Structures are given as C-alpha cells and as structure tokens.
Image: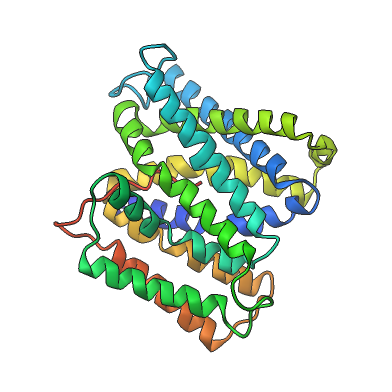
Length: 318
C-alpha cells in the first residue's frame, strides 16, 4: 500500500471518528455535567499525548526534533498566552458548547453545524487576517447554509425551527475557528503534537478551576469507579477522538496534504447524520437527505484545492 493510500485512510478514518463526538457524549451527559465531561476529556487527552511524546523521546524519534522546544518563560509570554487561548477557547469552550447544545438539538444537527467550521475559519481570516472569500466559496457557503436551513426546519425535526441549541452549537464553531490561525502559527513554530499537548493541558487546567469556582458536584465522576458504557464513551472521547485522533490527522496531512485532509473532513457531518439516524433512530426523510447532500456538496466545493486560495491547516477540531 502506498503512503498516499495510507494517508487517505487516515484522513477518512479520523473524519468518521470525529463525527461520533455527539453520540459518544450522550451517555456520559446523562450522569455528569457538560463542564465535568470537558475536564475529563482533556485530562485524558493530555495524558495520552504525554505518553506518546515521552515514548517518542525515549526511542529517539522526537516529533519536535525539527522544531523549537516550547518553554515557559517571560520572553515566551506571547506564545504562552496564545497556547492558553487555543486550549481554553479553541478546545475547552468548543467542546463545552457542543456538549451543551445536545440538550436542545439532535446529534445530526450538532454534527452538521460542526461541519461548517471551514466557513467560520475563513470568516475569521477575512475579519482579522485580510483573507478573502472567492466567488466560488461564497456560492458554496450559500449552498451549505441552505442545506442547514432545510435540516433545521425539516418537518421530521422533534423541535422544528431555530432554538437556543443551534446558537449554542454555533458558539462552539466560533470558539474553534477564532483561534485556528493562532494554532497554525504555533504548530509551524513548535510542531503540531507539542502545541496540542499544551493546549490539552491548558483546557484541562482551565476547566478544573472553572469547576472549582462554579461549585460543581463531582460525585458523578463515580461512574469512573466501575466499568460501564458511560466510562467507555469518556475514554474514547479523550483517548481516540482527541489524543490519538489528532496524531492520525497529522499523519494524513503529511501524506495527502492540507487540501486532501480538509476534503475528508466533510465526512464529519455525514458520520454524525448516519449515527443519529441508524443508532439513535432520528427520522430519515427525503428532505433531510437532500439537506445533507447540499451541505456536504457545498463544503466539498468550499474546501476544493485552488492555486488562488490560501488555506489554513485545520489543526484538529477535537
């Protein structure tokens, strides 16, 4: 098997995996608060990347050997602040709003809105980094938004029309997109694995203090004391979806490039839609299928490789 084929398998696999996030969070959220789940997720992800980096260093295969080694110092304070923002906002608040929205909207709707991340990233680039939408991208974004509208107002929806859950989920997308350019700058300087390690750490630390000040009851964490499907879901979220999922994403980028990996990420809403339909028995109608087709088609056009288009690497949305 060629390296390119392996890269495509990695990119497609991680996209399908990231599409399971909403469904994996459903069971744990029935017994613990969304803030507690976010904290647990990033504690586990931080531990996973710590082990991976330690093992790599032990065997002399450091993923940071061609990059600078990040150090906490006064001279490095700007990068420390950037990592803090990427961790707390781009990871922590991203997950928190996503999990919170599941109280109001379906898993399919959550996955579809998350799939709009590329549009949000370019919008942030337009507002703060002098990037511009092309006519093709504007048309593709319009097609995708028409699909989202059809899905939200679909007669099969248990709560037809917009509700607070859609806006909360949109806040999740904005949280991730708002720091993606900072994340890309840090990854270029320090390497992807090293920067994500610190981002996961800041996310876990930030939400730990948030829980302390908010006075959340930690008794629900007792679910970790006995084996259960809820525990399994938490472990998969932290270990596979966040920790190892990012490493697989890097592997895919190295072999098929940012354009190819970005194209594969369009499978995230498809994965969420299929899981919501066939596992959680969300109603399947022709209108919902058409809506999904418009969304995925619009996003494929939006991220299509172009020599005139500047792209920012989507450094994990999980």
